[in-house]
Length: 113
Image (cartoon, rainbow, N blue to C red; front, side, top):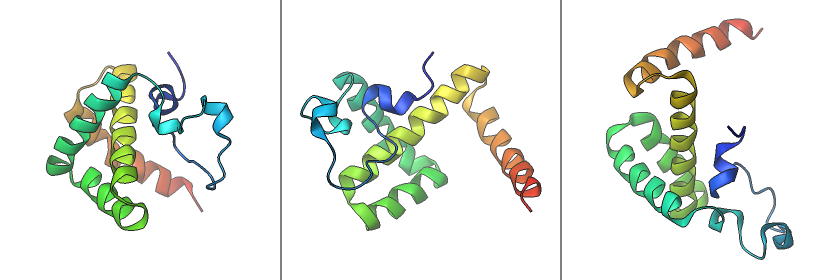
């Protein structure tokens, strides 16, 4: 499996500044790369997940106010893709993944000084 699932399908983590070297991406923006059907399905799944998942909804509106609707959709799709990747890697269902998340956050918070 690949280590950066978002980059593989065209959901980059960070574009950096506006002067992106488009020759690296074949003349297209990174969010236009990858499998078109997979990008479409992740976008649709992201829109549905926004209505049911409070964390994804919070992310969507935070990015929406800062960057706009299209970047907010890409951010939610990427977050959803990373969640799916972790679920497949660890062989857990979504409910188990959500139950595990607060424990991981507590563990990280106690480790920081």
